[in-house]
Image 1 (cartoon, rainbow, N blue to C red):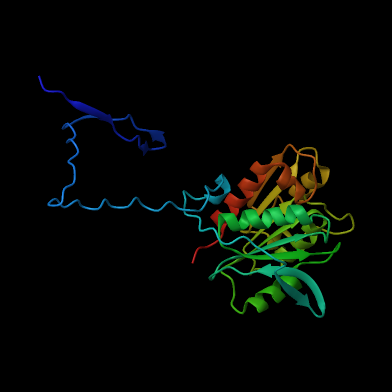
Image 2: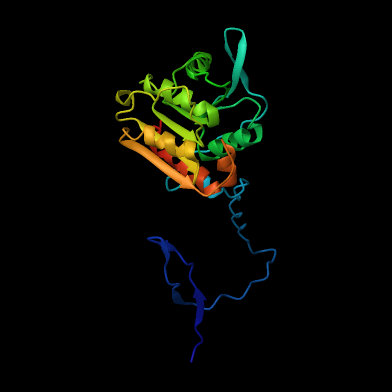
Length: 266
């Protein structure tokens, strides 16, 4: 009785699970033939080149692998000036893309801001703008200056504001219909300011992340409740501002997924 050869087929992902491996009969492999002067040996096809890009973390694939990550923001970026004052830095996308503005207190969250900018680029090739805002300063002039520097309107503008920058950004967002969405991270509301009018928040996308037990974050959520598209993430953490995203990676991943979902593609 002739022998049969068997091998295990590759396991394939089907519907989120792993399909059962197939066992299939095969013809016995031919014995190797020694090459001679009269024989012609076909050159074997070289194996495909492996992608030198290291595996991405989950933040790089927010929409079933449709993310198009860009180059990491390196260097200091291009200065953004309002008048003669440098208010931030911008890193351009390779092509037309949404503009993501990250506004925080100057010099306080440099490391956390840099980490967030790199995470954003691993997700998608956004235009990135970092704004350093003193207490009470709204981001509008800096955003307009950055768009003027780009020379072409971005696909959309989204502002991520943290700490003391959150409330001025919210007031500006309520009056700026050309801004698509707003994200607030560990917002610190200012005691002497009134919340923005509810009419400016209708139909607007807003995402808030704050720590459990953070009274300022809870008060911000309560003030913005009229916004029907408001999303709130309450996480277990102790850091303030953008540092909360560094402390709770899941919160950062949720924010990146929300951004990818709400911003348009070319």
